[in-house]
Image 1: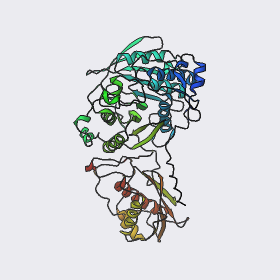
Image 2 (image 1 turned 60 degrees about the vertical axis):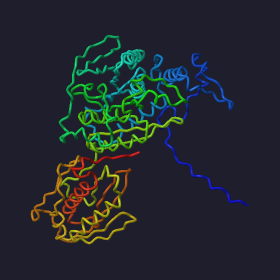
Image 3 (image 1 turned 90 degrees about the vertical axis):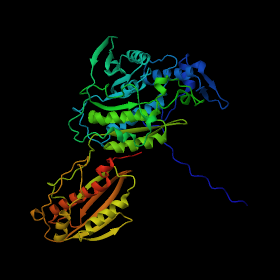
Image 4 (image 1 turned 135 degrees about the vertical axis):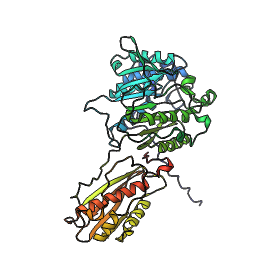
Length: 512
């Protein structure tokens, strides 16, 4: 009897966002056809009795988008022939992912003026469909600036906004001028066009002290054909002093119009301006990265859709080079189509910082965020052991449980605090106070041996929680323990959370 073949273990694939309206109940084409006669001619039934549409028919996909926006979102919408037709479930995934980023405590929110403030987003290349501002405003009450460069896109985006008076006040359509100066055009609910003048000055918050990375750093992974030469993206479009919670972008994915037409299974339309960019999406998103280096904390989050996973890796490398504080990625899935989301920020990480005045705690911790990809928790554990052993302390490590039991004397403590860290050209992006290093000047030197446990826990990929706990809860040496733990934090962050200044990189945090 032949042996039974083993079943291959199914690989868990990303699914639609759980808060997406269509996560539990995909669109019912049959029901929609019965409710909207204009959609009925595009629906046919397959042999298994399921209602379907022809995805290669632009008129069918446009009408589906129209009825979904009307039926599920109470939005009136239309685009002319040839314009890019968005798929509502996929675009909703992007909106909800940004909602996740904004609601997380990964970064601080220095742009907020108080509770109840409306979230403000910037849609780069909103297109005639204006889908992201419409969905963000209707689903979550966000306000938007949607930018574009073509007259047709601006006209129809404004029409779609005016067709929905319940959210009209939340959306501004802004014209991008490809000339040296940028003129702005606003469409208000009463249809008046307002010339807002020109502004090419870029707002940069004073909270950012580090100098912008040189633009040449963005060329490390790109050839000359990947350079962007087109209308302004953020610089010259964002006005002086403006603050946004996020920007988002569905970039031109392709380098040529021929490449854009290679998928015979779908027909979503799209003009050359929407679909094509010399250098493709890599060049376009690289320009967003360049602009973000200048604008820094004018945005809490910079985000973009990415069409090719190979480009995602290149773009993440570029973000490491320009010194962002955090990077996040995700995967958007709709049917057989996969897209990736890329987000980054220059805002300070929201983490617990141990300062020198905290002297009465027997359990201390800090996080190592943005662990460089070549390092693991084991590397950190080994470095911590070497840190204490070099001072003569007694160390007993448990590699399988990722902890070290350490005993130090007064002499060991003094050696640790006077052991200078390797030269640092500039302060790390996450600021922390350094303990004084004048040896005999410490007022918290332990009078007895100090015993404590050093432990490592992984929170998310790229982030480790480092914890130190005194073995004796009522130890009189808590102040000395705090100072020594500060010193360890400084050394580990210097080694693992960023490379030397000469390498041109800074630390980041990537989580899927």
